[in-house]
Every structure is written in structure tokens, then in C-alpha cells.
Length: 353
Image: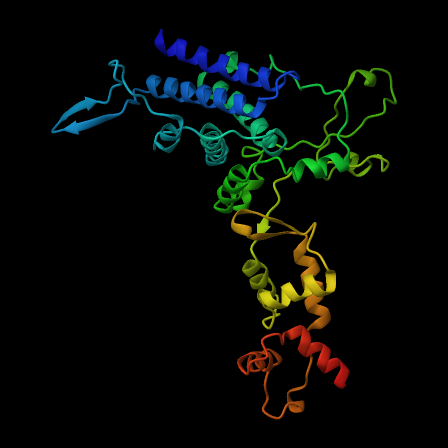
């Protein structure tokens, strides 16, 4: 009876989480969703462990006897969600576990201090959490417990324009502690884990003109990326995709250039390029914690093109001592000309030809 009650509570908690998130009159959406979703998943795993005879209570061993940890009122202390996920008997796959641990981390941040609006920044994770839950409750306990036939897509009154989407992704209202947690959490994930739909579920929505009878009833049409239909999208509409952008530190970008053969390239040259040639690094990255700048993936082809254009092609015999260009720059710096860079060398070399 207790196992059945736990599962019912788990299911109701998830239904409540989604219903509250879809309520247009509630502004405390993500925070409420996460709190209820964590409870829901905790009860789900407690039910699973109970059904499989796995003790999910905290205890200490004294000799061969278990001494259970209890609250001040005498109740057993059961595992929290993260402990359930870390157990070797957990039935949850790694991508779903990453998604849940991400939400647990966000919950820790929002329970210790007030946060401003975070809904748009983590909505893909919340969507994945809901879909993952529906999958696992049916897989572990039967299709009759699924919640997919009771929930629909939220309806909103206005479309999202590209300008609005840019503002959402660069939301200045998102507190630094949440931004920092997202960056640090995803820094430790593999690329395939970040892209997994079980970690963050992303949908492409396209405005649809009804051409045939019956189509007018369809509010949303799903098109798989790369299919013939997706290539024929009306060009008058902007495609909006919500993604968690991959980020690179400056040294990572330099290493990528070295791997491509530009071994003379360094961070000071990159700084010199965006400051003096481009004049700005806006749209190529983001400033996160401790004033540390992270570059987006769209910066890689830009800086590679710069390397191709400026790569010195000096013939060895034209240099008396046979120095490489990078060695000359290094020698000048050691002599006290700290402002002398590879860019300075290239400009001097071009003028002297």
C-alpha cells in the first residue's frame, strides 16, 4: 500500500509541476517546477527501490547491526534524490541523471537566495525532465501510469521574435550565481551529453499556413532537422532554436589553432586582433564569473580565417640566424618591447617587402 501511495504522490507532483509552469498567471514558474519535480523523481525512485528490496534509508553499521538515522521526531531519514541517482542500483541512464543533477544544482542556488526570472534560460532542461519522467514511470511501473495523455503544450498569446530570443538568451536579469552554476556544470559534461535530448529537450517551431482542409486544426507541426520538409520552410520566417552554446576558454581556442598548424598563434595575438582589428568581441562570446570571457563556437572559423590571412611565409634563407617568426617576437619581448606582437611583426614584414 505504501509503495502504491508513493507512486501516486510522485505522479501528482509531476503533474502539478507542469500545470503550474504552464499557468500564465504564475511568475515563480521554474523554481516551483524544479522543487516539485525533485520531489516527484525522489518518490519515483523510492518506489523502485522498495519494489526491489533495496534499503533506501540512511544508517550506520555497528558490528553486524544497522542503526538507522532518524529525525528528531523519530522518522527514518530516507535518501534524497541525488543519493538515489548515485546508487549503483539506480535504473536511470546517464543523460537523464545529468539533467536531474543540473536541476538539483539550480535548486540549491535558488533556495539560498532569491533569483530573478530564469524560465527562458533553463526551459529546455525542464522539458527534458518532464519527458524523461513520463518515459521512466511507464518503463518501471507500466504504461497505465504515464502522464503524456494528460498534459498538452502551453499556449502563449504572442510569438517570439528573433530580437526577443536574443534578449532572452542574454538575459541580464539572470543572477550571476545561476549563470556561474550553469557554466561550471556543463564544463564537466561530454559534448554528446550536452547535446542529448534527455539532458535538454529542444524543439523547432515553425509558423504554419494551412493549405489543405483539416490542417487549420494543427497549431504546431514538428519537422525533423535535415528532412526534405525542413529544408522547404518558408524563408519569410525566422527559425528560432534554443540551444546551450558550447563555450571555449582563450587557451582552448589557441590550442585548436595549434592543432590546425598555426603553432605561432597565442592569446595575446587573439586579443590584439579583436581589439584593434574587429573593435569588439560582442556576439562571439560571453563574460561569466570572475570576469572570465568564454568564446562561442562561431569564433573558431573567424579566428582561423585570421590565422590563414596573417600566417608569416618568410623563407628561411631570408633570415640570417634562421629564426622562426614567433622566436623573433619572443626575442623582442625579452628585450623589453612588450607591445611587440606577431601582428606587429607581420605588419612590419609586409611594409618591408
